[in-house]
Each structure stands twice: as structure tokens, then as C-alpha cells.
Amino acid sequence: MTGTLVLAGTPIGDVQDAPPRLAAELAEADVIAAEDTRRMRRLAQALGVTPRGRVVSYFEGNESARTPELVEELTGGARVLLVTDAGMPSVSDPGYRLVAAAVERDVRVTAVPGPSAVLTALALSGLPVDRFCFEGFLPRKAGERRSRLREVAAERRTLVFFESTHRIEDTLAAMAEEFGADRRAAVCRELTKTYEEVRRGGLGELAAWAVENGGVRGEITVVVEGAPETGPAEIGAEELVRRVRVREEAGERRKEAIAAVAAEAGLPKREVFDAVVAAKHSG
Image 1: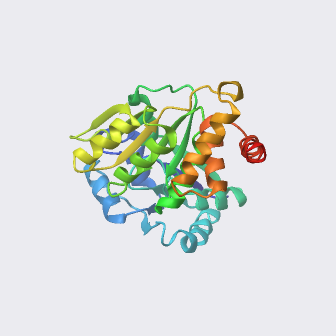
Image 2: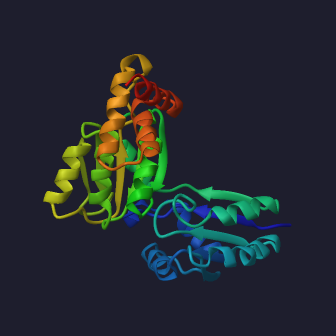
């Protein structure tokens, strides 16, 4: 008999949000794999629980090395509980490798559903929630960050991002430039905590607010409205060429400029490229 891998959601701020089953799992698990063992012990103490199982660290730095060890525990019949610092494991947190390895070995995987910053921010944003996509953290480097934003600029579903305190100003400025200053968004910080704040407005307005406010502190989730319904008939070839030229004059390479304009317009890159080539030949 193989064991069971339990993915347990933990509070994203208020410890009272812990699901009741979490306390039972902490008390009964044979092995607890925690992103931060000290934080896990503080949570257990707050819930009035003393873990009886072995506690091991499981974080980004040792995830690859520790996964085989945990799989061996599971195939040996152990009940392994996986918890991260906040929210559900695997969602921008350690967990995916272990789940994939467990599934490959036919180990039962179950979950203790719990708080989620993604769904909480989405619900509070005031933006459409019927269809959305989660993008996680954007790349740290400015160029890579802008490239990623261009890739999703034409996405019509509501977008959800995580961001750090140190990069939020630059990220909001880049979003305003790539998505448009008027695109609606919500910056959600410290969700469920004492200083919870949800700031709503256009991306340009939010970028300016972040600068004027001296930054945005705490755990941050950004929710952005999907791209408006636009199509080829609404943007003519001349306008496409003009937009590419503006970006080129600002220092972008033609290939990047074409990709960005195509994303903005919701068109295939080839269509924008053909318009630029046609304009060059006619000129």
C-alpha cells in the first residue's frame, strides 16, 4: 500500500482563515514538508497542534533534491503533508515537482482546500471574473518583463499577477505602457491582514499612485482587465505602420515593435509585418 500526499492550503494573512482540517493533518501526518519549518511550527502552535511526524524543509532551493526522498516515504506508505508559507502549494510555490513525481508512482494525491491570494484578489478587484488567467510573478529583468507583458497584451481574459514590493512601481509603469494607461486594474496588498488595501483605477493612475505613495508595501497581487474587443477592421494598415514607427523611433528593434503592435491590436504578427513591408515598398 502506498501512502498519501496531502496538499494543504495555509492562511494568506489571518490565521483564523485556516481550514479546520489543516489542524488535523498537522497533528496526524507522518511527514510534514514545509517551505519554512519555523513558520509552520508557529502556525501549528497558533492552531493548538503539536505535530507528531517528522518535519523537513521543502523550498525552491532543495525541491529537486528532496522530492525523491519524499516519494520514497510515500511509496513506503507514509502520509506526507505539504504546506507552503501561504496559500495553496504549487501555485507560485513549491509543490509541482512532488505532485508530478507522486502521480508518476501512482501515489494518491489529495488536498485540504484553503485560502488563495489569486481568487481573493480576483473577487475583490471589481473586474470580470467569469474567465481569467494567472500569470504568477513576472520576470525580474526589465526587458524580459516587457516581453512577457507584450505576449499577454491582447489576452481578453482578466489577468492576475503576483509582484514584489521592490518591483511593483516598475511593473505598473510597464503595464501602463504595454497595455494602455486606461486599462482598468486593481492593486491588492496585505489581503486579509490588518492593513489590507485594494486600490482600483487605470494602470496609468495606479502607476502614478505607487510612485507618489513611495512604493507599495506587503504581499501584492495585481489584477488587470482583459484586452478590449478589437479586430482588424477597427485598426487600419496606416495606423499599424504608424504605431510600429513610433516604437522604432523610441529605440525598439523592428521585430519587437511589430510584436508589440500586433499584441495591442489583437492581430497576428504576420499581418502587422505585411503592412510595414507594404508601406515601405509604396513609399
